[in-house]
Image (cartoon, rainbow, N blue to C red; front, side):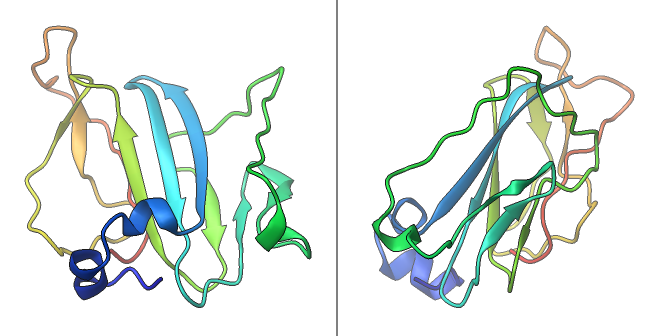
Length: 140
């Protein structure tokens, strides 16, 4: 399904029905999940940290959910590429409660790669004076 604003309002559970590619990242802000949601027209998704991880192989439509766990975690630095949509789509980033203070954004606001969207919170829940950058993929 397409993921434009109109479709999000019209299709209940749209983000849970479309193909999803989830990367869990442990870092300064605790555990974060980067959820790449493929939409209509997306050829496939690849992981920047592992060239063997990709969606849409010949059996993809009939395949079960696949998981890959690494004995030695893959390094993903702040601002590093996590994955690529081959034709584009939407990314959702989920943080542990109280670990990140998000900047106010308007519904439907566009984001550019590398734009700051919040700061890491101190253990007390208040934002630290020095901000860290969380990033959103290009597009919505």
